[in-house]
Length: 32
Image 1 (tube, one colour):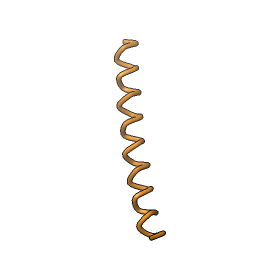
Image 2: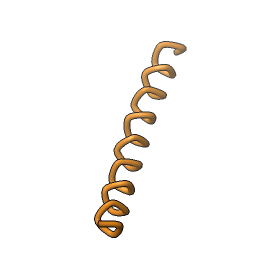
Image 3: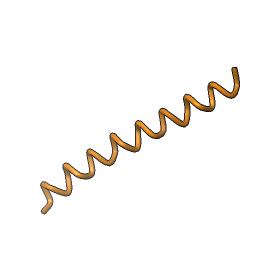
Image 4: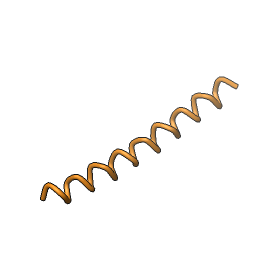
């Protein structure tokens, strides 16, 4: 279970990072 949880955690982190990048891009678009 620990191993599977580790993989899921890493995948979740990557997903979260992509979402954060998208929100940042939107903020930059509003500024410019």
